[in-house]
Image (cartoon, rainbow, N blue to C red; front, side, top):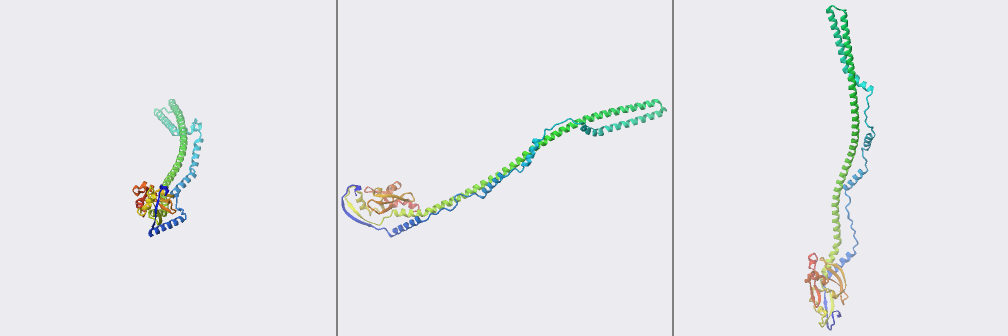
Length: 373
């Protein structure tokens, strides 16, 4: 054992450790389970990874597509109204024509002048009757003076009739002109008002179409939001299913790791010859003399191991190694003292300069998490 300094062999001792039958059976079962797990074909996840669109979302997209593909149902009416507004000539007011004046004067003359003329005629008749009666009473019928009075009365009647007719025509003309101009102004104003109503109507139809579009888009937005909530709920359910699938896939490996962790801390069936040497700083003599007394403590010093590789971990995270002791061709599985010491210092002791692990203490945390040690 030159790796620990020079030494002198003083004797040899053969020690046999036999693994209990229940541990051997457990180890064989564990290996069988591990082989079955290793040979198990890959199982792909067949569930939904992403929640599909909900019916509300599909309805929202369909509604938006329908709105985008539709045209303004009032477009033709709007075009006609705008065309009417843009092509209409400016309203004008022209001087009344003779025919227009006569149309307005004649009703006025008939309604206002004729009654006055009729009244003048009646007054003339009454005056002449009165003169005739007065002449008869005076006994001067046929007298020249009576004729003069009758002629004067007739002349006065004619003057009054002429003046009345003149004023009637003047008033009729003035009224006709004023009425015609007012009518023309009113018609021009009405034309402009009609044009303004046309453009207002076109804008109203545009606003109506925009209101319908906005209402549809608002409805689509509400459907999309409701669908998103449904989709998120479905996605959460799909994620839970996928996580459960992953846990199921790793369950066999966890069980094997648990048993492996438990078996790693048990003594092995071995038959070995221990070389007894003089205690000149060599740890091998001490190791040989303490082999039976250290169980269940196991020599786990990294310095006495070779071909080391990590093959797993305990539930509390300690690496599980596969290795050989130096000078021994048999493979072993277990922990490393320095790993254990960093987590559970009281599970590691030092004997003859080598670190030894108390597996019961070292694996207690894993056992508390569900492992059977």
